Structures are given as structure tokens and as C-alpha cells.
Amino acid sequence: MKAKDILENYAFVLPAAAIFAVFYVVPFLWVFHLGMYEWDGILPAKVFVGLGNFKEIMADKAWWQSMRNAGYITLIALTFQNALAFLLAWACDREIRMKNFYRLIFFIPPVLSEIVVGMVWRFIINDVGGANLVNRALTGAGLTQLVNNWLSDPKTALTTVAIVHCWKGFGWGFLIFLAGLQTIPRRLYEAARVDGAGAWESFKSITLPLMIPVAVLVSILTILGTMQAFALIIGLVGGEFAGYTSVPVLRILNSMRASSRFGYACAQGITFGAILVAVSFVQYRFSKARKV
Image (cartoon, one colour):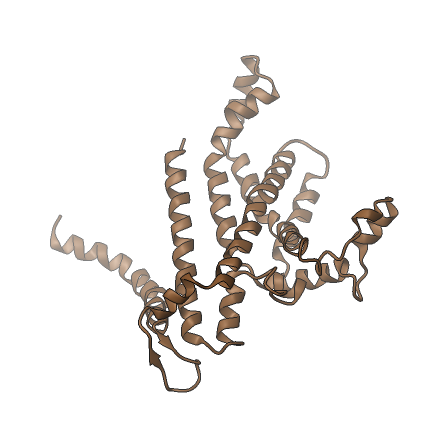
């Protein structure tokens, strides 16, 4: 290839590369630089501590508790939320009455503001000043032994947050699964029917294998979206609730605002980003290995 052709090829990607460098690479390097200082973010005085902040994170029990909480919410989202999204998408892909109405209804939760959703569900669930519809429904059904302070009980607070998060986020998975199902050629099902395959055989041999790449994509988006969620938790429980509902992004915000440790917050952000990149890389390798 001639040098002129090489220069022309680079010229096409240069604008995108410049934008990426300005808005992603430079901020990342700057945040990493700040992560090596003990700094309150306001006064000009900064104390260089090297990798001291990163070492402190390794021994920070509250930080790793927030990672476990985020992992627990993500695990529920990967199973319950995505299973619900796939089943609803599979149902709406078939010839059923009012399927366009269902598609519209399922798409409403994802477009709502997370902070608004959190506050509405807080009003519905909370025992203090709220409608408390969940406990009223349990009482009406005769299940008074299940009545609980869902957002105030350390045993149920995180699970309640996870369930509300699933309600808020399943619509995105629903749309992606539905788009994936609609790309499967109908002639494959017709050929399977001619060969005598039933509904279960068609699902197992056609739908499931062809939907694996879509499922991997939904899983990656679910992990990245759930691990970075925090506005919903603020609206729902008002914050970390003594660590029981703490997640990494809330820890970073608290380090920066409440503790006035800007450098430590930057180090937490870099650590958290590295973990997400590692998880995404594993998911990517898994998707390549299972590609059909």
C-alpha cells in the first residue's frame, strides 16, 4: 500500500481518534494523576502519596462491601431481570392480541428518570408517610407474617433495591431481545415444522442458539449499567443506609463530597473502571467462544 493511501486511511479515523483522546484518554490520565495525591479538591495544596490511595482501597472494607452489594444487584439483574425480559420479548414476538400495547407499556420504565422512579417506589414501599401498597396487599391476602419495613430492614433493603432496579431496567433487555427474535428467518421455523419439530424442539434448536449473541450483549449492558447505578438508590433509600445499600459510585461520591478526599475518590474511580473493563473483557471473550 502506498504512503499516500496510508495517510488517507488515517485521515478518516483521525477526527474520531482526536475526539476520543480529548474526552476519554486525557480525562482518564488526569484522574489517574489526581489519584496519586491527598487533596480536598478545593485548596491548591496537594500532597503526593504515589500509589498510597490505591493501596488504601485494597484494605478498605467499606469499598469492597459496596462492590459486593453491586455484584448482588447485578446477579439478580442478570437472572431475574433478563429472564423476564426474554420471556416477555418471546411472547410479544408471537401473534398475540394487543402486542403493540404491551411493547409500549414495557418500554415506559426504562425512559423514566431513575431518581423519580426511586422516589415513587419509596412512596409505595416505605412505611413512613408512604402509601405502603406492598404491605397493604400482603395484609389483604392474609399474608401478615410477610409484612415488613422493606427499605429499613437490613435483611431486605438491598434485595428490595435490586427488585426495583430490575423493574426499572428490564425494558431495555426486552427491546434488544425482541429485535433479536425478529431477525430470525421465519422460514427456519416453517422448515422445522415440516420436518415434524414441535414448539419446544424449534425453541431449543433454532431460537436458543441464534439468541446467544444477543443474550451476551444484553448481559454486558446489564453488568455495566447495574454496577454503575446509584441515582435509583438515592431516590429509593436516600443513600447508603449504613452501608447496607452502598454501591461503588456512591462510595466515590461520598469520598469526594462528604470526606473531602478528592484524590482518594479519583483512585476509587480508576479502580472501579479497571474492574468494569476486566469484566467486559471476560464477557467479550465468552461471546467470541460461543459465537454461532
